Image (tube, rainbow, N blue to C red; front, side, top):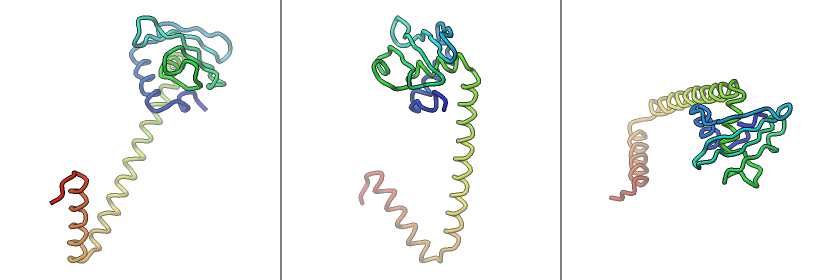
Length: 144
């Protein structure tokens, strides 16, 4: 399991942004699969980050979000993507695949809705339309 797949969605996206913006100031390999880096964040001093690609939960960072916790932060993700750009490509490929799948299922749902509507009789269609309009108005907080 990849380090980025263990991170929150927000951490992965922010880490990807940091990677694309070149916020990894420096990095080096400490041992096989373990990398240390300094990532420029919101403070003047870069954050000290260590990632362990074999044991992601052993990764750590001194940023306020991750310090003292077993979480994957955006700085760890940025370091991972910098060291392994193919991981960034894999992430974006997964995003694109997910978006394609979501669009496919959305279109399938619209086809089902169309089939449902076309199968209704006039009085059934009017009743369903009225129910839908009332639900829309209630969601907007308008009650007539």
